Length: 123
Image 1: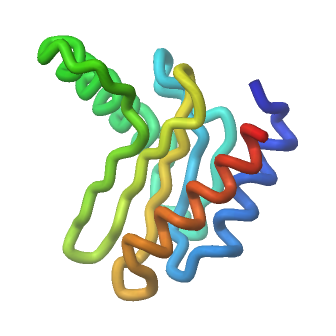
Image 2: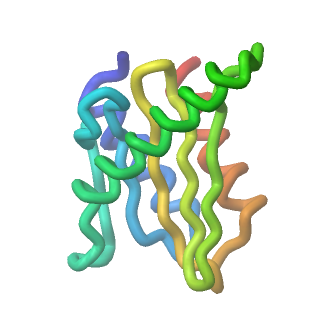
């Protein structure tokens, strides 16, 4: 597992690469607790978002098991009318959750930046 400094740097690097960055957290899947987080909006509660998004990851894993799929969850993208939300698995126990303004970025740029930084963390 990465150190606290590495997780904080991951979020800072992603924030600087993504236009329209709203917030991000590295989340422990089991507890739903953020291990590191940063938001540019004080009203964007990453503790609440992290907890609910960990439930989505657990539910998707249950779905994969129920369907007897030989597959591993990589990421999930949620598109809102004003925001893009990406959940990217870092390893089996943690994921990064990211929210960005939909008018300031696009899905391809968002996914590319997150994948690049997560790959560097795991290298």
